[in-house]
Image 1 (cartoon, rainbow, N blue to C red):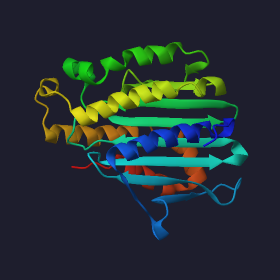
Image 2 (cartoon, rainbow, N blue to C red):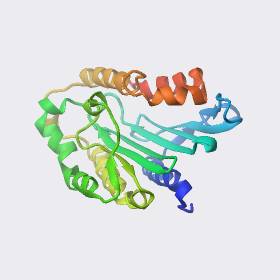
Image 3 (tube, rainbow, N blue to C red):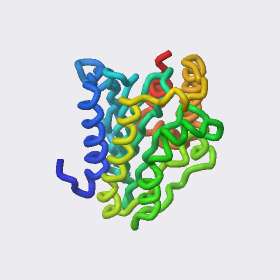
Image 4 (spheres, helix red, strand yellow):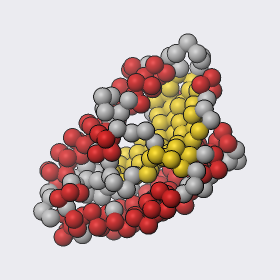
Length: 251
């Protein structure tokens, strides 16, 4: 794909998604007429027709991968989101990437979502997140990146290693190595597992319950106001179907 300014977010998301699909041999779960799981049609008067889709993939050792694309030319929105969910009874973090162009700026959100309380599980934190510190520091210092506007509640439910940034087009084109480093580390965790010593007795039931509660907060209209922006575009039914899909647990 040609990485022109208008396609930078799509190119980054698609390249990352393709790696995950190939790594785990994922199969797409299609919707009507073998199309996307959920086509998105604009419900706002500013545009007529399709503006994107929600896609769902399953297979391998993952629970599910969900992507959401919303492209609305009249408001210069080019948004691509990906969540790769591990099974709910696993302590391996989920992987997430948002890749966006809105108007004259780009933005991205990159993180591994903790499955245990980092403030009470030092060995888990060191196994899953501390190795990301050099890449996190690199992202913090990269020219052309500035902090995204998130609330303290949003920071609290993700990881301290989250990179959530606004970016110039030039800086956005240079973040591939950050995304690759986070993805490579996550793939190593999925394939290698978490050492038993790092779990400190956390059992499957506790992991499933925490996953359920955590997703209910992350994908919450009151916590993440992006749903207030998405709903008028795709309609309340499509927005709620996305939320319900993202909140699903495997246990």
